[in-house]
Image (cartoon, rainbow, N blue to C red):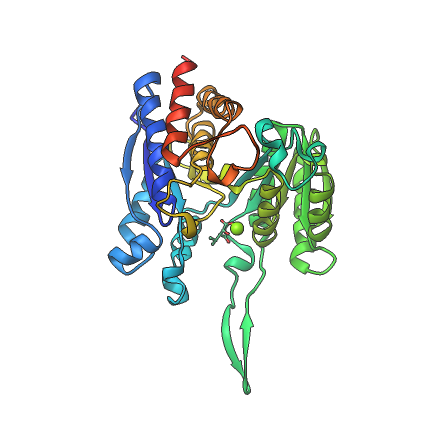
Length: 367
Ligand code: IPM
Ligand code: MG
């Protein structure tokens, strides 16, 4: 089998800092587990705009289509706030999602034991939490037409369109059911079928898809009630499936239940390629965090866990992913904490690179 390929797009802000730690982990697997990747690196977001005047160069887009998996850091920053909508760093990321057709965005919200005190919710509400949000990522109001700011008489009107085809709903629903089959076999679909026609169709198509998964217990919730239930008793959920916009909101909410955005990975998956691997992009849930750039404060764990998801979902290396996740838990249990996690007494503050090195140490110790 040919060497699997990875394209690393560090992007902006703390992206390059955290991706440098991911590279150490990738190298560790090459040296110690015979798992060698053909790694290339390129620009995205503001970094690409500075170099090429576009947040994603066509050559980079073409490369992303060819590799086995893309690992992205973060995009955005105040420097780019005044740019035209089409030049903004975020457009680079949205183009990757759309053109690679990465329709299923997996956002796990897991509570690490060592960090259970860190949540703003009571410990018994979140300890042991393990929820997977599956967010539709290539359609809905993010991409629907018509869109724009138009003129009506003397006033301007902002227009966006929520639009879902049956096929778009069905394919993301199937991804969510498949995941539920491998977990606790519970799926909750969230929509606004009480207000939106797209929500009515969403509910119908998900219910139809359930016929192929008789072992999965399907429930439906309105997305607003879902947000309330996620904060009230999040452990009632196993897998949640929802549309692009609700998924954006609910995944931030779920992420913060666990204490820190700096801990959470994500996988964006599309249809299988010729080699049977899904088109895939892995990225931390957190953003570019311009306020802490270059200070060694960034937490590399979300990006490193995103690589663990790549091992699991793109390369069928579940055991290697387990090893990496165990190493991260060990390091947290030792009390090592990057700046985003520093609240309790008796912990050891570490920098971004020290955290990466400590995880390498824990991997070494696992051999
Ligand atoms: C996310 C982010 C993006 C989104 C932005 C950066 C375009 O918030 O991945 O959740 O809205 O999808
Ligand atoms: Mg978001």
